[in-house]
Structures are given as structure tokens and as C-alpha cells.
Image 1 (cartoon, rainbow, N blue to C red):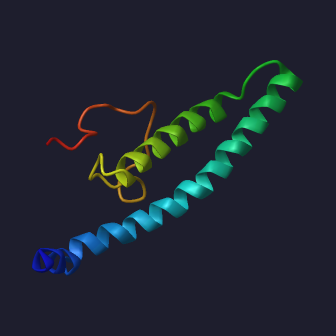
Image 2: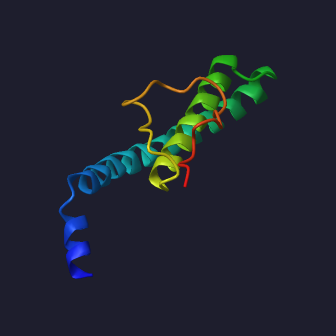
Length: 102
């Protein structure tokens, strides 16, 4: 039992994933502040002009999808690295190939 744990602790893949996870946790935290800024700006835009900002709507959707991809990676539901190791999402999340088959 102790040998199995020792082997797992010595695997580079485990530590490499841990570093990726730390990196994406930081990005996730920063992205939450960006989402809050988008929310406030869209609310002010609706009050002042009566319409939402179309570019910001699209960016908000893409950022939401990005946060979804980060969450999938951090919770071990996906092995696919999100942006910047992959392309920036465009639109709603794609459900295909998002989950690890067991």
C-alpha cells in the first residue's frame, strides 16, 4: 500500500497537473472580477440606453464558457486544458467530448 502511494507521488504527470490546476485557479479568480465588471457595465448600459452592448454579450458568453471549461478541468471531468493551451471558446459550451469516459 505504501509503495503504491510512493509511486503515485513520484509521477511527474500528477505534479504537472497540480501546477496546471494552480494556474487555472488563479485565472478563475481573476475572471470572476471580470464577470462582475461585465454585469455592472451591462446594467448601466441598459439603464442609459435601453439596450445591451452586443459585443459585451458575446464576450460574456465566451467568458462564461471559458469558466465552465476551467471548472471541468479542475474537477477532473476533462483532461483538456482550457485557453491559453487551447483555443478561446466561441459561444456556449460544447457538450461533446467534455467528460472523461469511465
